[in-house]
Image (tube, rainbow, N blue to C red):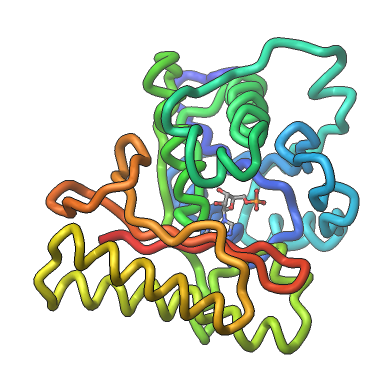
Length: 265
Ligand code: AMP
């Protein structure tokens, strides 16, 4: 696509299997732009060995209908050969990719940053919309835009949740009924730690204890916790001083499903 004088294009990058979280991003893009492009690409380079690339939910016809229902102009669904015709350049965003998701999924953010950068250039978008649900991804993309002077405005939209608080995710489809019933614990514990921070005397030691106790409660409930942390929104470092903008983040496995969630403080 080309930039056209006076018209703005909003891009919503996705991997499909649309739910209300995706549709909210599309609606935000629709309100703020003349043209809305949604990309649908299950990007192989952001999946690790043994992750769910093959079984990732795919339903193009349903996604086309949903995108149309919220006024998307273009659904761009390239195949792998179109995006990666040969082994090519990749983007490494330092520092903010080193911990959390980046540590557990070593090539994940390089795959994400590379495909998002390619999509920015293919679509020639003015604004790009991402969900707070994937908070570290937002920090990484914002940093890439900044470091590489990419002329795209970054927009982060709030996490859309099920009525019981579970963050909507394409991967929730993997949950067994028993695991689904326990999954809202992630958000409940994030909220209880945030409440303690706001109401209590939040010393570094005390915050450490609250984070540790929340993590232990998840383990007792049958989760395997990858991290339950408080991070700085700029550089994604763990923090115990909450005077700067920060967020609580959690990642935990239940059964075969890995869930992530976060809460801004
Ligand atoms: P995905 O298809 O999972 O790669 O997600 C595409 C975009 O939708 C990303 O920017 C996600 O952060 C965003 N997203 C996914 N789930 C939600 C949600 N529950 N609320 C808001 N945004 C979301």
